[in-house]
Image (cartoon, rainbow, N blue to C red; front, side):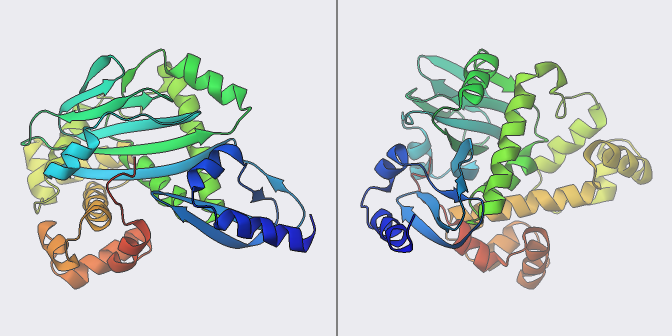
Length: 330
């Protein structure tokens, strides 16, 4: 493609008023070797179009959006997520619930929501999330992805091997996996986005093999109890000695047990839960940083900012600019 025609095409794309229409009809260019990424933003969906030098490859999947909704209690938020809506051709939405209780309407079926529930919404199927109890607010991840035309293998995997079972209980241990998908998929960086795409594809294959899908099971009662306590104590100041005491275990034995199962220490996991909640508050609310710091029981705003940057690579303020969500994303 000549240099002038390439630039004209990119310019034409960026001036389209309906990025959605473009996405459904024109393949996004993902170069093998390229430079000068240009961001095309319309409504709730960011896409990245790259000028290219040698050629381009098109990934089998595009992550169109990913959100984390933390403790859904606001009336407008409940109303939005409770609306019946559907997605377009080859678009699937994966919902992973980590807290709270309610019901998920998927076409004519109604499924119970509890921590660890995973539900896939297929193209053109109307679905919604119904809150049952404000005392048990729902927290969940949602990933909206689009399969590239002609991806028969992935289409078959989802439609035949995965969707024959409408809901799954996979435990709550995948929350950081979904957080990584969200951050990488929406980063604006081509390589990170492709990394998230391949992570998601790997997860789908794992999901199809139900016999091997037991990372988040309840095989270890002590660990599962510890996880429930930590998940329900994010806005408290939970100490290691008190947690071990609730489990009737010594601190040293509990640390060894937890690390063997979760590949990290209990308090590191607990801190990551707080950072996850902080990220949701930063991207989903207008609460000042010092308020978020106080709600999550950090020593000070400075301490919170330091810990947050260590875990995410961004300051709270920069993170908010990068991942600010608006109602209507999914």
